[in-house]
Image (cartoon, rainbow, N blue to C red; front, top):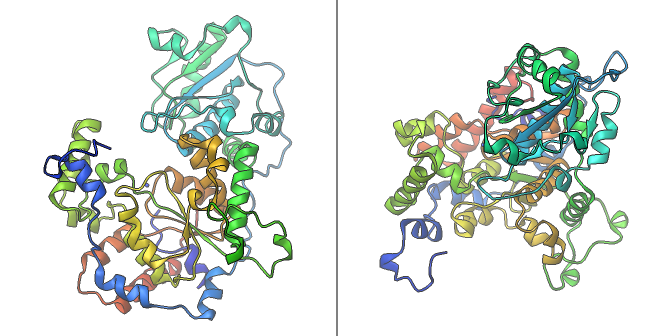
Length: 485
């Protein structure tokens, strides 16, 4: 069963308070009035179920050593070329995990071109308006030191290139800016198209850059370097690690009744090592924000008001260009194209054997529908926590309003959890699966198509649902599918 957990279901993401209710916008109605549970029969049985001590022991048992060789190991010592072809600048958009992958690619491109990499520039996040920089998120000195024998990296450009700024490239076409890098470009593409720019100008700025380097058919040493960047060089700054450690400590060593003072769980456990054992916890990345819900074009049970609100949002953000909108909700769900709601991911966890004694940490930016939408998940897992419930406002002050820093804390906690599960595929999902696989940690990856089909069957009993989940997991395990990106 231990193997089953890792390989589980594997497939390879305020208006005015005085507005009369009759004139409230569809968006307000849909987000403040979450729908009733869509799977009430299953939910009722799941709330009542309890897991045996034997089953719990199986769930929390660490993975056995898979015998894999770490991808950062090399048969030869890394060498830093004596001469650099010039400076490489990259401009990365997206959220934290998309930017993280871009940083790995940027180091790889610098290696391919024998160039000096300037610490990547992180674009202001278009969705959350987050202006966090590389230095705000990652330990830059550690980053440079770990890679010093492989790639030359500088924090800033020399004075002679003072003009090479984001604003400079935004105002006109520039000969040294590369705008035409295709998605998943090969190493040879960079040698043919970017190296000549370096030789002519001494600097090349690549924007856009996200997903601009292929994964397949790359030299082995470049793939190894990517792993080294991701798993060794990219370390969060101390304030993120310190807050993350505090949250992990409070999850593993919940305070007693006499220790809850002021803000919930504000008091640290100073003598944690003297406690009897440690508590296990699951980190759930609940990828169910408004952006995700609208882009999926699925029906989440909120009725006409919710459909109108999501359609309006979809029109404003993507001008209606959503491929999934040509399919019916049933087709989307049976194909695994609908993100799991808080209720559905809760039912999946319950079917696996997690019960109301499970400590669950919710890693999410903002859930569409707010607390009302989460209430069904909380009814299954009353010991559910998040950053806000586990820390004081003073502790969170330095990361307040910074989506990238908030995501970094969740990533850090996720990497230290006993089990991680993502409700839907996406950048966070991919990053965590790869990192936890590297460290041989348990990760649950739902089979979206199988679950979509199960949730469409309204006649399923709890026992049938539970058996189908386990049988699906066993089938994947028997097929020899392994955990990875």
